[in-house]
Amino acid sequence: MTWLAYLLPLIFLFPMAALGAVALALRNLHDVPIRSPFDANPLRGPGQALRARLDQAFSTLFLNGSLGPLISLAPLMYGMGRMLFAQRQFWVEWALYGMLSTVLVLIFSLLLVRDYQRIRRLKLGLACELAVGQELDRLLYLEAHTYAVFHDVPAGHFTIDHIVVTPGGIFVVETRARSRALDAEGREIKQVAVERERLRFPHWQERRPLYKTRQAVSWLSDWLERQCGVPVPVRGVLVLPGWDIDTQEAANDIMVVSGEHLAAQLTAITLGKLDKTVHGSIVDWLRQRCPQQEKPLRQPSA
Image 1 (cartoon, rainbow, N blue to C red):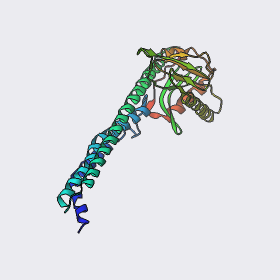
Image 2 (image 1 turned 90 degrees about the vertical axis):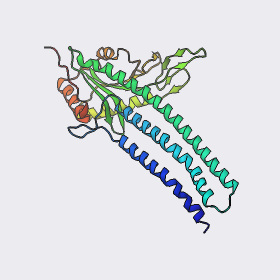
Image 3 (image 1 turned 45 degrees about the horizontal axis):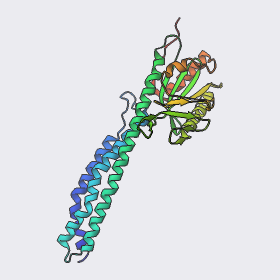
Image 4 (image 1 turned 120 degrees about the horizontal axis):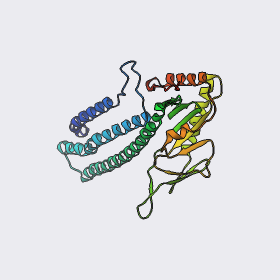
């Protein structure tokens, strides 16, 4: 029977399929989130959303690195089986098997390069998130005022990187990591100009960071007003770690800063006087929204 000559070579693919199943099982073990031993809720900290994306990127890299060779060799293994069971040998058929394996090798090589670049970007973003989070946590050790800091706050279909509650208002802090550009002589160019709707980097422009910051401010303002029953002053802060910021043409509704001495900058800004009851209610509502991030509050000195 002619069809048996095409069916029986599949036997050679069974060991490779078993290895692929093992790789998939190991990937699923890696994807299990870390949860609190007290209430089984996922633990969240500074840059948690980026940590999850980084874990996913490593998982994808693992799959492409483990399954890529297996899938690329599958046509050749099948061809070897065909050589054993086929009554006649056709060089065109063997050439097709070789070409298919070559194409698969190229595809998985490109996927691995993509995964490597993605992991580098995510690591840079996570480093900036952690640096800004550590800078904001300095506010918790000030004795003169009452401050609270929340990281990676869930907000509908997106997350807010940091929320800072101060006696003078609420700050939404968004962090964006961007690699610095190089000039023709290999020196770093780290000047970024801020306009109302866009950021002008040395070799490109972006509108999304400002848009996402305004979106976060709008969501938090509406949510806090619904929870507290009164308007609450909220201002957006966009942090670009490592960049020199030119704000001559910037709008007044968003602060764009490099993040250096950010805690001191926020303590010097007063958006409006918050009533102590409203201030406490805001902290309580935010604690309920992200219970795994409860931070100690510093009370005003007597």
